[in-house]
Amino acid sequence: DGTIGSGEWTGTPYAVTFQLPNRTVRGSLWTAWDATKLYVAVEVGDTSASEIDVILDVDGDGALEQGDPAYLSWANGRAQTFHYEPARRGFVQNTWNSGRDFARASRVHGSARVYEFAVPYTSTSQTPGLALKYERTGVAGQFDTWPTTGVRDAITKNPNQWVRLSLTPAPPVPFVDTTPPHVDLLVWPDLPSPSNVVSWRATAYDNVALDR
Image (cartoon, rainbow, N blue to C red; front, side, top):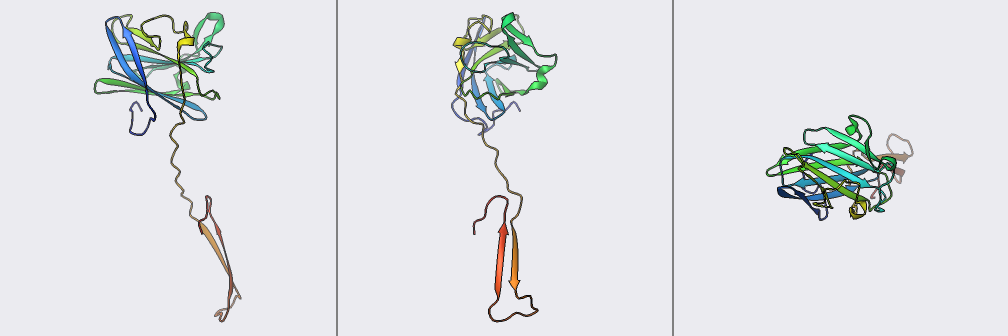
């Protein structure tokens, strides 16, 4: 939702820096993952941040291979997905409006802008390589990449210098048990007014567990 909510992101964030021609922009990066998605949050101290790109070296080997993805998100809500093609030595757009491939949001909070991503991720690697590209609205050339800050080379040039993530599990969704337990009670004999010693049997069922 574009907001760093309380308890939403755990662990110490990565410190990120982008060196523009006339200013330095600093921020923070959080990551988490589950069985199907990689979650990324980027907060930068610049409300004019018009674009954040998340680029992945999925297996974390320091080299880009066929299909390694790049996810582009703009402050206006538009987005695109790219994939790496070795024959072209660069990223190729999947489809126009390919931003449907992932969820994202961006909001301004005071003097900062937050970008949040939820991108498909089914790799077993818990240490993928990651790089960010930042672009600022206005003057041409107002962009930089991280962690190769200030180099301003093509994002594909130095994947061996990208940060290796140490992924932490996404916060678990609290389980709410809405199914009540069920008890069957059977009494012998089947008489209108039983007396003396009466035999009975009870059987209890529950979809989660029974205490006693």
